[in-house]
Length: 168
Length: 92
Image (cartoon, rainbow over all chains, first blue to last red; front, side, top):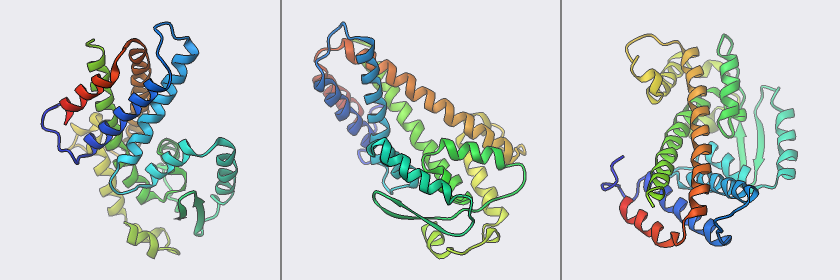
């Protein structure tokens, strides 16, 4: 990865700044002992992973369904999420327009179905892309492409940071 | 895309043409390393979707592994604030 020609307004540098800031905060919050317990290490792993996903979701220029879904998942306590998704799933079997409220406002979703052999893969894809269960086919494919681009950027930057840290 | 979304409140499946789907699927195909080399072969949509799922899963695994690695590395670094500055200057 070319390190020296980064466009300061690119997704990569926006993500890098946010993520590094989050890492510094995580490190500052708990004084690091060289003898951290496995539980502490696990908690730190969770915080780092959530920070990475959150940083990327915030760094996208035009807000996407997947990025909003990611932020919602990470910022809404699980009991409120369970209530919301119960309401969403019970209306998924209908084919008319349904409105699902997210904490940022109303999101109009439309369910279309496509016959043929794509059914199983589409279901799998819906589970993998944040917010995927409520997207129509076109949006799902479009969001997937964007999601993959962002995920690869996220992985690149995390790998570079990890490599730089392990040079110590 | 957002225009279509607000306009097509009662739209049926026929509004989304096969061509649009094929376009989106081929766009996906370009993003997946496995399938990028087979650009001129006919890769079925089903295969593209399958490989997309596999690819996303492997990316999720990499994020997990890297988070894990970073948590170990953070445990063994002392003054990470100036390291962060170093990295920032390298990457900007």
